[in-house]
Amino acid sequence: MRNKLWSLTGLAASLLAGTAMAQSTSSSSDGWMDEWFPAGQWYVGAKSGIGWLNHDTRLRTVSPSGVPIRGNAQYDDGFVGGLNGGYAFNNGLDLELEGTMRYNDANHIRGYDSGVARGSMRNYAIMGNAYYHIPIPDWGVPVSPFVGVGVGAADYVPYHIRSDTMPYPAYVGGPDAWGFAYQAMAGLSYAVTDQISLSAEYRWFSRTDADYPRGVTNDYDHNSVLFGIRYSFGEPAVVEEKQQAVYVPPPAAPPPAPRNYLVFFDFNKSDLTADAKRIVDQAAQNAQSGHITQMTVTGHTDTVGSDAYNMRLSRRRAESVASELEKDGVPSSEIEIVAKGKRDLLVPTADGVKEPQNRRVQIVFAGGPTS
Figure (tube, rainbow, N blue to C red):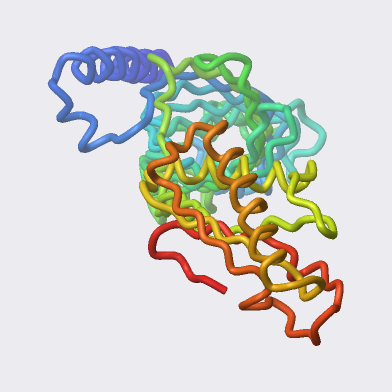
């Protein structure tokens, strides 16, 4: 047993040294580690808990006097402990190397029921494990369920198993035998900080091989509940999500300012109403912002009155609009005044009809439509 403990101690030291070396190398290797181990962290950890065997151990041996010894050994729940180290990728996958020890005291040997059972069953294993942390919604608690599998080599040692009623001084034990082993795990981890996490897991382990220890004729199958702590080196990598390029169209150009404005008047009036002034002011503003250098102001009337009177009235209306445009900053040299009296009616009517739509002045920028 002392040799086994030294072996596991050596394995633990190797895990710690190897992980620290890998961490140091990864920080000074100009990025080659990032190609092989993208976006992750090296870690070391320890686990311990309680374990129990699946079935009795079938014993078959011969005492020094030649008496056959057969029986089934049963065991108490016992101790499980291990050390591990590996690399946690940022996609939920962990790969690690682990060394474990399992220990269960014998408590009964069927066939020799009246005697006190002595001795223990011990197991030592070196395993390579793969864990996968299952993504879950963010509930505000840093808990992650995981599953895992492992393969490796293990031995199991029936250490001085005997009953007081067995033919003295016979006992079952040694030498041990190494063979193929595998295991499956499931549990939960809790991130205390970015570097420290705790875990709880159930584990099923089997060392199955025809090369049994002396005096034993069946496989070693074991269950355990383990609690662990893990320390991760460095800061967790932040994976930046690639944002899909989104085409943002340029803002649409504002619609062009109108080039034609109608200003309406009250019956037999040439002064501007408040609404008429707002329209003239807007026309002046658009002319200046649009760099208009020529416009026509044309006055009209309805069909009430003589032609001569309506011609003079339409001119007065056009001059009122031109005067307002000049107040708004439009040079008089850019304004052409036209009077049409009761010609070119907007709404055709008979003579002598008071039609409001025909009492108007039309402002047209150069190149704009006329009515």
